[in-house]
Length: 301
Ligand code: NAI
Image 1 (cartoon, rainbow, N blue to C red):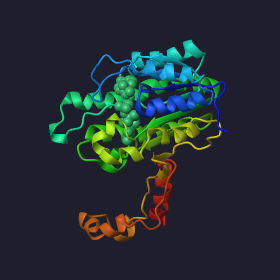
Image 2 (image 1 turned 90 degrees about the vertical axis):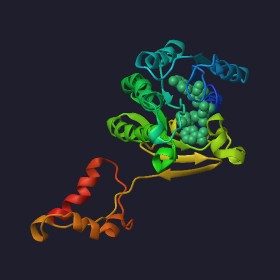
Image 3 (image 1 turned 180 degrees about the vertical axis):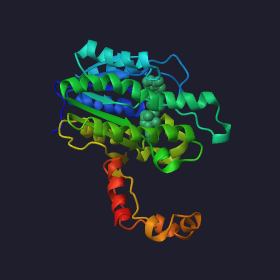
């Protein structure tokens, strides 16, 4: 049984959609949960709503423990106040789920500077701002679980989402480095790329939305947040009951030995595109050192 008795969880953007389901599942399994959400539209503009209150009421009615928080993740001081609120209410932070998100979709050439900043601020900078103070606490205690929320829109690409895709893939880079920097502690950092029928995806999923209940994403988040989770640095696609792993592979590639065969030329590149792209024998690395370890023997040999 995966459970969280005695654990404190912070879930950002937990007033609705995926975050609300994550918060409810963690609370139902014993976590004390800080339900963060300032409210607002899908685009991140204020609309006077306080959805965090509804989620807290639902958790409390079901016998769980939760408090609401209305700070935005998008500015450093405000984001730090989210972590402070969890410490004030429950004494510490063991689990952080970075889930808050907005959309400002537009073809790249039409994006305003404001559209670029708003999306990067909430998804990417916001994850930095909330994770830093949380991680400091986790390092002191030698324990923590952090989940980031990426998207196939960045990992694989989606028309009209350059700001969102870049922010979401930036989170994968953040995870890869945090995995290494936290490895000597019992701190795990993992990332989901979810698919769920929420207000954010009504247009995208259309009739398919019903097949992607947000509650079907939360079990993966709960496992990543649990003591049982012994993996770090994973990026998993999850939606509608499916769970898969994304990974980055480095192909065997092409090599021209400079001393024996002369320097690499643009023509060599042109003539060897197929070999460079050939997926047979690819490497899935665990740090940038693996790239060097793979390539150096080819040059030395
Ligand atoms: P949603 O719009 O239902 O929920 C997002 C929540 O984040 C909202 O309640 C919103 O008020 C909150 N939020 C917005 N700006 C915030 C800020 N500055 N500080 C704190 N909270 C803020 O959308 P959904 O679908 O539940 O999205 C949750 C996360 O999952 C987002 O990061 C989204 O990008 C990501 N995602 C969702 C997918 C899906 O299929 N629904 C696909 C891939 C990623």
